[in-house]
Image 1: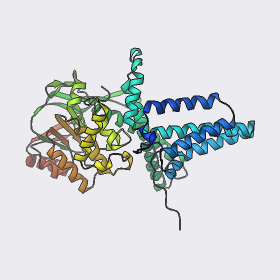
Image 2: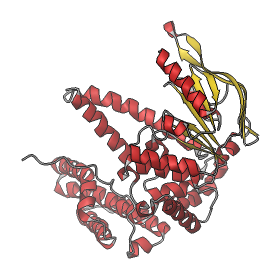
Image 3: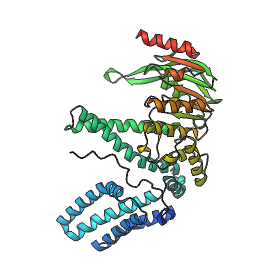
Image 4: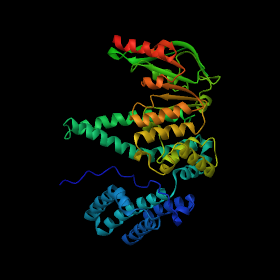
Length: 208
Length: 235
């Protein structure tokens, strides 16, 4: 019996309500720790600090009680990329650097996942708007930047679904081996979706 | 109230040898829409959606003037859009936040600056629309009907004076179509409903029939639907 196809899963990092210490922690603090981790993995060299950072990211996911199966599935593409990069570095410049590169990348993405999974987008937007307020003087609209971030988070699953639709349409026409039959309509429909979203934003008065 | 005075739309489209050709999408139209429920019907590509978009300035009139809620749409576009809600055919384009609660809260960002109050209001709105249990559900995991209901909830959360609905039931099954139409029937705002559903049209106070960029019939539902059926039978 063939395995049933996997349904489109929740994108990694989608907010999951909860009552853990990380859910209760201020969003600003969580973002500050995430930024510090990002700097630390670049500044502090060696495989052991990188593995410690990875432990930190994994530990945070446990504390936040993220469902491990969904989180692992969501992180699978990043894990694969980390392993490929780490493998290449290990081959070219030794195993220590390979471990460091893979663990650094995975730890930051895992920590970022914990931040977005324990913080409602509305809270992140408020924080972003407050943080960017001084940049109004140079013509930057904090509300517009915050909205762009929210749109990016929403676009990930939307584009995933769009890709599946386009791929299925190509398969239905017997074009599963023709990348152009998937990529061209995917690009066209992505632009169409972006235009429709822009119109909808304008209708909601969000671009005014 | 919506007033159109010689309001029309002409666009430039690419022609042969790289030239631009002018094409009339909507002929200049003069009418005053005061009725509570107005339906707009017509063939695909007839200009119905363009007419709907004139109301809040999503599509600016290239000739004439449009006044909505007493405001000139060309000069007070932002204010008009804060008074006019717009529901699109495809809710996927309209829902921009990751979860249902966050999307309704986004609509309320300007009206309710305090985040806790905003979230409480958004929850109330979701409860009112029967989506309370879906507050934290990812938008992409909702059914088509739930998405359209959520899009309506997000628009109606701001209590608009006018609601423009551009074929909001086209993608829905019969049950969800009825749910969305019941909501549209009960909305206190003036509703301009672009639709292909002739049952919904029968409940309208006034019906405009659009054909090839012109309003070819304007009146009560029975006469307008008869004119529309004649029009469709001819082609």
